[in-house]
Image 1 (cartoon, one colour):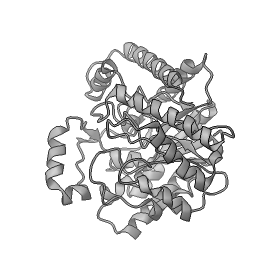
Image 2 (cartoon, rainbow, N blue to C red; image 1 turned 45 degrees about the vertical axis):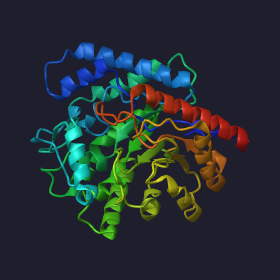
Image 3 (cartoon, one colour; image 1 turned 45 degrees about the horizontal axis):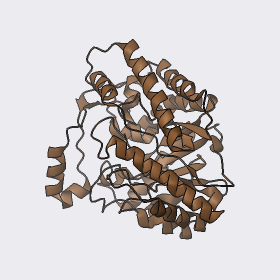
Image 4 (spheres, helix red, strand yellow; image 1 turned 180 degrees about the vertical axis):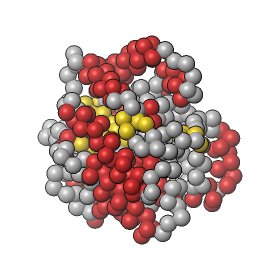
Length: 381
């Protein structure tokens, strides 16, 4: 990861809106309907080229492929790995929020048409389509070949978030399942880094599962789970230089109460033990925007960089650039300007469907972030 000594760099969390045409192709694949693979791959290549150009046109510094060829940021692995032939389920884990506000939960369920059944793990995990990893890399490298860009990253699901979305029905324990995922996914992690790209590990499991998968646990018991997930992640990342990696932690990219979210201060010491140099986290939405103050109490370890969210990714408000600049300045004043990169709370296309933020507004929000970072840089240098 590059540190800037002259301005605040900008990036985002990874997923960006897909076109209606690509959404339809991805939906066809999800439904396991006949799909012309050649046409699908050509559509993905073009979509990656288009989304790279759009990122560069608005002035983003650290860009990616927008996860254009993936239906969802974690479950994409089921197309690449064997072992996920179990029953397809829509896992409606009760959220603690829903228990307090059942009328809101009912409303959200009625409005949602985006839940896609996902398989369980019913056998040993292994690669069945390794070429898919290389296609992602090739598409991104082709898209940036003629461009000048600060840095390029590619996202990959952490063992913990995969286990959250694709439940275990084969391995003897959750820990055994996590390590089995790590032993396979480390091949993808290493391939991304060998290709000269930054690796971003998506790790929402370190926070968002507190109100769903592990809602039955006490806070201290949940923190033990987080510790195990970080240990598994570090195992999978062994040998990869920390400066070639960043990670994303969030409480779920959903509009809702979020009043049972685990506070950042309760998990930050554990999260900072993860090997990646960069840490991306939510910092703009109404439930977590105040947590910039945590960094007054927690010293950022030497060599680490933070990527706080300065855009909310669940509303169609376009943040004012001056607000973005204010948010950036709060972090800079505590951890230093060279240790801050501006980012988004989460993705604008976490799944290919059902986004709250309209495509054109998502891009306008990112443009506002670029403008806000420019204002902040003028004030800070």
